[in-house]
Image (cartoon, rainbow, N blue to C red; front, side):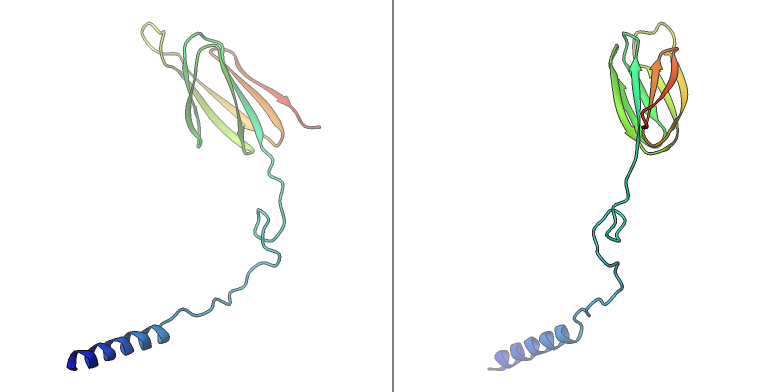
Length: 133
């Protein structure tokens, strides 16, 4: 009987504790409409540009784009990647097929909304083509 009374007291204490320490309703201010990519129910167009990476060599190259990491392009292949507007430093490094040192080249590309830039390597450079209408 003593254990039953003790268990009832413990249950009452836990129940009362839960009631008095429960979470309050959040009455914070939230934007009207919700949704949208800006949190206010309005979709703001996100406009990127494209960089086309063209490997003119038979050897694979590692392409390192500042702030976006790196990837490998096989010999005589290309890759199209989408980037937000801004200026990017691009470093290409030959992975194999060199005699003493790999070919390393660095390019600067200014990406704008709707732009299409071509980075062609090795030894070719950057060609910017606008795709805006």
